[in-house]
Length: 357
Image (cartoon, rainbow, N blue to C red; front, top):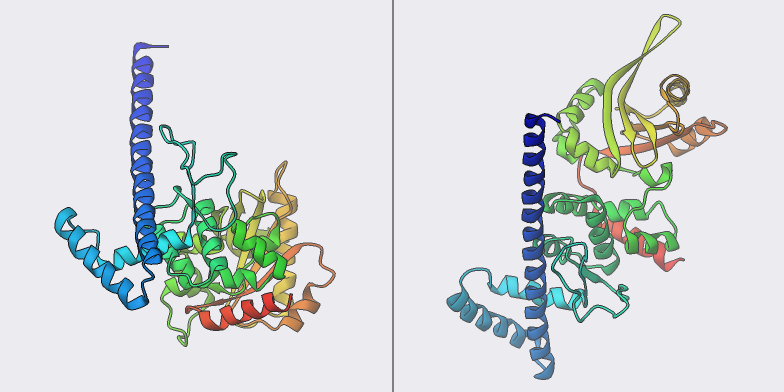
């Protein structure tokens, strides 16, 4: 090894050491902040429970505490913040400290066997800003789902807010039975097969296309490419972009796949065809052709059979059922919409699903 290469290797190791230290410092600060706010909420809750405060008295107490703390400690202790700290303790009665962060010890609220207790559990893998968003969920199942999925997929606060606004939990839950919904809430979305990556509908409000605006498939594709990062986040965990307008030539005739992705968890290509009109049987036949080509010509060793997703503005379930029947390739047909869904309606449907289990 030359002197220059040894020198560069030394610089690399120092850089890695410093970056890891900075990361640990941020994680430690975040953990201490969560524990502090949780304990503030605990003190407030214990105070109100021992003195039997009513709602009006609780609001006044929070206002009084806010004024005192702001005067003594500065910003960060508004009545709104204290209200959420109180709710923080009530909604998350347990700690779970990630022991991979050096220098931390388990909280005494953690079980001695280092197993997560029942109920919602506070994890230091998310920030206070994440929990501030989570606390705006009214349903414990919904809150648990977004917490686990945010951890699993590394969502930013902004993405967490967007997925909650787009009713991701309800959209996925409605494709499952009651047992599946409970598992979804407890563990977040786990990708095991092609049905786990399907969403119906996909919400593409970030494209900023007016709902009744006239547009072409080419226009829709360009909008997606312009907002590719957001589109991949809507697709879910594991998608990597490969190409747009992927050309397939057969018998001197050209075919073009709108969008091609690779799913690193399922280890397969995912082909997406965009439709602005209702899906017809020949659209499904065309996707079947694409999938056969990719499995034969593009797949390499250890790749699983490709998956096809036809994204359409309109879908007739009966036509799709008969068109797909008998096809061995994995073809999914899902609707997309250009506006946020009616969350109240979706929540009602999920509630009915759980009640009729």
